[in-house]
Amino acid sequence: MPANRSNRDGYARQETELRDLMVRGLAGDQHAYHALLTRTSQMLRAYHGRRLGHADADTEDLVQDTLIAIHAHRSSYDPDQPFTAWAHAVARYKLIDHLRRRGIRTASPIDDLPELFDVDTLTQEEAAWDVAKALSALSEPQSTAIKLTRLQGLSIEETASCTGQSVSAVKVNVFRGLKKLVDLFGHRVAVKANGQMK
Amino acid sequence: MNSDELILLLSRELVPTSPKQLNRHLTLGLLSGVAACLAVFGIGYGVRPDLAEALSSGPFWMKWIYTGSFAALAYSLLIYVSRPTIDPGWRPWMMVIPGAGLFSWSAFILAEAQPSMRGELWLGHSALVCPWNIALLSFPVFSLLCITLRRFGAPTQLRWAGFSAGLLAGALGALIYGLYCDESSVPFVATWYTTGMFLPAAFGSLFGPRLLRWS
Image 1 (cartoon, rainbow over the protein chains, first blue to last red):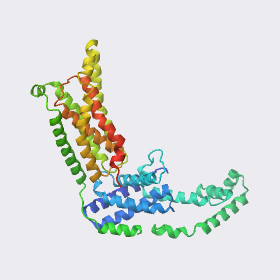
Image 2: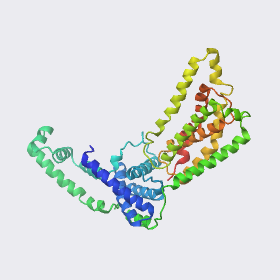
Image 3: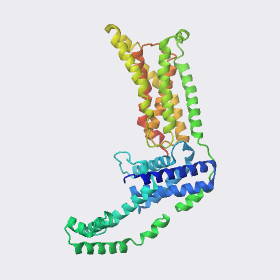
């Protein structure tokens, strides 16, 4: 995801807010700490979900393990350093540990950037992941038609010439594909709302 | 338990903590390690008989400044990687400075010296034992730092944490060894003291993940 100016500004603003909540939490402010953990858990859910799969039962367990680690080792946070970098380090450590215990070899350290831990980027990425997974449930022509018209913003005519489908075929594929997506995945909206795995 | 309940629980049991705790523990561990190292040194080596004269000689301070700068740099790295980090950043690169400094000085001395003198300049009389003595003296500090890291630290870069603990232990061991060792040649120090300092560093780097893993 290209880090454009508004992403970076949002990232910086969020970092300041989170750092402030953390410092207050370290001093004993339970209210601030609660807000911090809630916001951090959203970032963790997207971060771990991207790697493990959002529907994987382990994802929520890993989010909780990471929250517990953050809590237990909160005094290791240096207020002169960014909070998101610190939280990202804990999340990555827990993720690698989990993968290692599951016997999955990560060839190199997970090459991610601090920006990947940013909520705005993550919700976009999370959405992109969900879409990719959902599209794989469709037939080739339908999934291609939807990708080009809905995700890449091509017109029906451009899509037709690109894929070799006729204009009416593109229209039919998009319509049927979308209908199938709604039938298959409409219920997932309820799962996302409270982060609980049903 | 769902995550909302967990977050509520953690917030309810929140007590104030200080970010200064970890550094205090590390310093305490370090000082205990140095005390133990001095005890081992006293028993096994003892200060050189000509220490008083040596203290006013250049080579003595060259050794102390060299090993002392590695100790300072290793300490700075250890403080950083003993807590969650993604990258050690610029700190390890700083170590190139004393290293490159002493190596180029040695190269110059060896080049300028009579060819027949070069062997003695480089090997002295204790080349083969020097690194192992330093490694031995590093053991107390390294052990106490590892114990401290396991109990109070939260390193996420386990190899760097092991490396910095090993290097700090090695550098302090080399520093204390300078109280006993009467070698004074720069090429000797550049080669054998450096090797001695980096033996525990390499060990720490190799076994860091096994020794320092936490959950």
